[in-house]
Amino acid sequence: VHDHGTIVRCRAVKKTYGTGQSAVRALRGIDLDVQRAEMLMLVGPSGCGKTTLISVIAGVLDRDEGECQVLGSDFSTMSAADKARFRAVNVGFVFQAFNLIPTLSIAENVAVPLLINNVPRREALARARDILSQVGLGDRTNDEPRKLSGGQQQRVAISRALVHKPKIIVCDEPTSALDHATGQKVMELLRSIAQDAGLSLVVVTHDQRIFEFADRI
Ligand code: ADP
Ligand code: MG
Image 1 (cartoon, protein in one colour):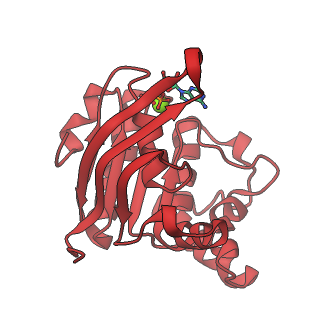
Image 2 (tube, protein in one colour):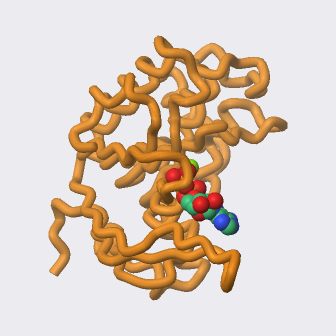
């Protein structure tokens, strides 16, 4: 029975890259629950498997063994198309290096998850502009990403991860390319959005200065 307070449930999850002599056992039996509306931080040294774990949770990387349910669904039983659809509806991803599309405007970047969900272009852009004004970038929506500072680009990336109202957002070192003050603002934004929308955040970080934002580490 799916517990509606538990958004992610991983048991004994294993993932190995490569084979034989060069095999890297990145996940060696991870148990993890993520609760609804929780901000969970995953902290550990470089190479310990953090990106691998959130990639499995987000359904962009297949595990080898173990169980992993997200909102009661198991990616390993889905077709590639079903997985893509599930992610497009339920999951947001924020990357360390922002990963904005350089040739698209900021509004177009943020609209991408809606366009994937077949929202008409005009409505998608209107919703993108709306969320961009909520993060203080309402006057920059027609600019290309390269015209923005790092903190502004990360706010665009967060807007893109949120615009389709997912149930869970995974963030891979979202403040590591930002200065302290900007990182704090980005975390405040993430926390307020998570609280307002009741969504779960899994944040990978090395940055001790943002631990204060965690419900659990
Ligand atoms: P973290 O995010 O904690 O730094 P990763 O999940 O990126 O760790 O990596 C865990 C381990 O798996 C590391 O030893 C890394 O070198 C290895 N690894 C990650 N991705 C790959 C890959 N695509 N092919 C081979 N090894 C990989
Ligand atoms: Mg990593």
